[in-house]
Length: 101
Image: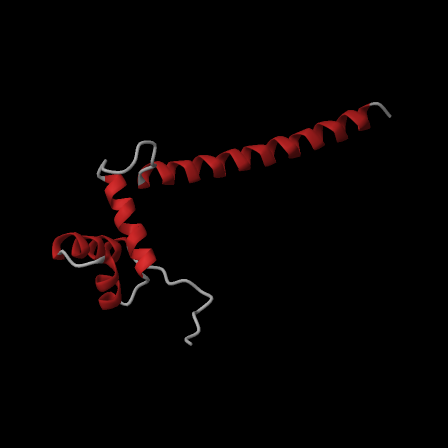
């Protein structure tokens, strides 16, 4: 039984693009290509699926890579704004308390 690493490998966008192109152009299965490249077959399958979505061939409502990136960016911005509002609320309460003394 082999032990899997607890850390995941990171692959460049170019590597992912080329791996997906190899699956599409070769006519071989995702598992065969993944084994040849030394990557997880499930990971490669996910890259192929995302590439199909990015080309407009995915299921209705699936997010493209650009939409996913925008969603991450907007969620981060909302989180930062919520933190700012919380700090400003505490500061307002502090100064309101100080002026009533």
